[in-house]
Length: 510
Image (cartoon, rainbow, N blue to C red):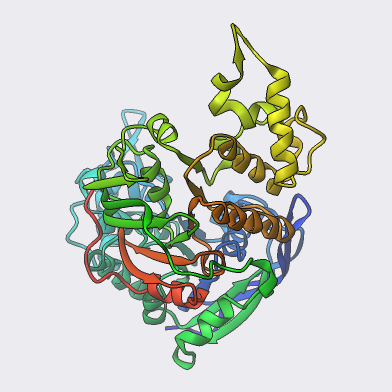
């Protein structure tokens, strides 16, 4: 229950990266005992805002005040000293230490014995017991190895570690992303206990059901500004979704396919990856753009890689391309079958920055340019120049280092690579991540043109607007399963609504 006393206030926060504004005058405040949901679509600025509060990033301008006084938060240690703690999305316990050791690792109680400082095991256990009881989970044995706990219990240990240092503000980033519904109940109880004890909780989640259940207030960011600040008991789900996903100019996306899908070019049945995907089935026709949308933790991060054969544990009941059965053996086999893949992390997994546009474009098919014992560089350059012209890649020529190109033009080179190989199916992960609005428009046009030439295209994205604007059909993943299939008329709010409900069944087991 909020006391009404403001603990943290952020005023006119501005932050840019490489000249691109990410936060533009954001204001945010939270009171003691208040639970505030921080919401926004992918790229809205949520993570940047809380990283500034937690001292991970510096702000370009603006002010942070703690209990009404100006605060200097230059690094994470400043934030910790001010009582601000971050619980990251990924669990970060030390699995081989005990519960008690994890909780007090930053401040182990010591006693001197024969002139030597040793850990006071009694005080260590008692501190852990007191903190776990405070969180409503006093039944956890402080001596138990932390790695043997369930995921929600490990989360509670993280929270106990945070409040052991007298946390005043707790930032929770997607805390239930890896939890099934029954497991999440444990965490909900802990959030309520913290609020009753006067801790301010900033709760970041895409799951609107739990945000409505847990929070007193919701702050929505969109494109680096505050698009809404609502009392939870006085706002509807549609109002929140509309604040998150205000429509962009219609001309951003090209016209979709006029006719419905034909005979499937590509078909997969029962795609399964332990801990991530369960029984996923997908059809893609020639000339069709199929979107796969999901929130972080839904399996969307793994589905494209699984389809390409890059997930060794993935299996499928059936996988057919162009009437021929193919297997999920390895990426090389997928390329030979006619499947291309552009990874979300293009700089880490898709491109070699110090190499030329030519070298990056021809790399998977270099054998086609071998003449005798040497590579025909002139033929390579001619082929690359063809795709530079065809895709409108802005580069100084085939020999320009690819690291000097913009993000949008780098992404076009990734497309050119597979066009050179005459692929039949193209799988694109987050195709416009880190690309400005002009570059996005050009990439969307190229994707549609490729489909019109007869390719099947799968776009895997956590951007609801992107999938709704681009795809002829959209599949929605939720806890590893396809929970909805929507047509070309679907809008971003339809996708987000389908994906943001709490799971009806438990997540796939690891």
